[in-house]
Each structure stands twice: as structure tokens, then as C-alpha cells.
Image (cartoon, rainbow, N blue to C red; front, top):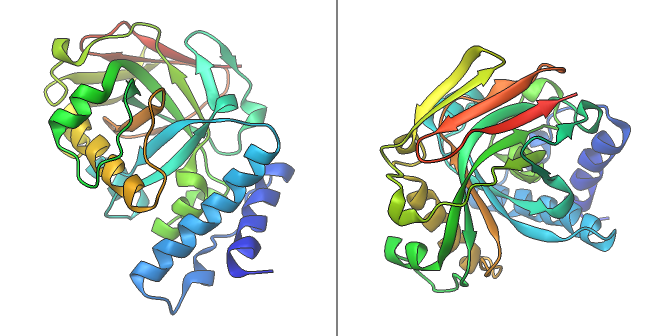
Length: 262
């Protein structure tokens, strides 16, 4: 069994047994930074492929670690990406059973839905605008198979960028109607404000994050395609989930979006 499969099995078993495991970064020691990243993404792909072979469908990608606040929380200094699958998608207002998750947290962000492929070697912001059908407000429910969220870059990449679920709002808005960098975000647990931020917190502009993702995925041979959902990254600090509460995000230009935890 190769190294990627050994690490992937640890994360797979943690999810299946609902019991977080120790950080996996010890398996990356002694490798160059480039080789560490290559191995971490290989681990991610092993478990994504397992899920696809089990009948799940890839519906897009997520960008992680775009907010300086989130980077500071997790002790990392660069973006990463993960894969979105069909059974991760939750409709605004649909109750979420917290038993599906291990250590959930929520963060508000902008989702882009593509109508054209992004398969050029290097993309411009204009390419991103041209390829986007519309944007949606979203709440990503991040999760970690690593005990206590004790993660570094290779831990979260291997763990599918700490993916869990994602809630999409139901009001599509064209990019021409949005100030993506200047928009503000507020998120509340019930009536209590728990997170706030702005579009500029996401690599200066959510389109910058999307451009980074588009270029990176072309480099690894899996470009973004028409119909893909792209979660562009957190607009403010992520917040630990308390079961039985509703988390509502207000993002300028959109109707509120809710994550309801049963």
C-alpha cells in the first residue's frame, strides 16, 4: 500500500467511525514543501475517488484558507482547495443533522455557479466574470477529521480542505449587480452576532480566489467546468457550531442564507 493510501485510510476511518484521528502531518516530515503538497492532494484524491466509486457526484470545488483571520486561526499562510460532492449540498432552510459531522464550524461566503469552462493556462478576472452564470450567498459547514482541529496545511489538504457540507442560498444574483470586494457580511447564531467581515477578506476579492483556483486546477489537469459550484472562501472568521441553533448570514446584495442544525 502506498503512502497516500495509508494516510487516506486514517482519515476515511475517522469519518466512518465518527472518531477524529491524530494529525497526519508526521507522514510528511522530511519532504520538500512541494512534495508535501503533492502528497497531501494525492491523499485527498484517494478519498474523493472512493466516494465517487460509491455513487457520489462531483459538483464543484471549494477554496479554503483565503481569509487572513481563518489563516491565523489555523496557523497556515496560503489557500488550498477541496472537492464538493452532491450529498454535501444543503438547501437554505433544510435542517442539518449534526450526527453527520464530527467537529463542525460555519463560515459565510460567496458561491459562483459557472456556465462556461475555465480551462486556460492563465485566467484574467474578465475570464471569471464571463464564465460565471450567477453568484449565491452560501454558508460552508467545515469539518475536520483531525482531533481538536489541530491542523496545518498538509492536514487540511489531505482532509479534502476540511470539507463538510455547504448551504446555498436560493437567490441568484448576476456579478454586475455586486460589489464583491466592498460587500459586508454578518453572521448570527440566533440573535447573537458571531462573525462579520467583507469581500476584501477573501484574497482581496472573491474573484481573486476563484482565479487562483481556476489556474491551479488547470495545472493539475482537472479544470473547472460549466455547472460547477465554486465556494470562494470565508468572508470572516469561522464559528464553532452549537447543535439546535440556526446560523444566518447576511451578505450585501443577497437575501439571508441559513444553516439550521437539529
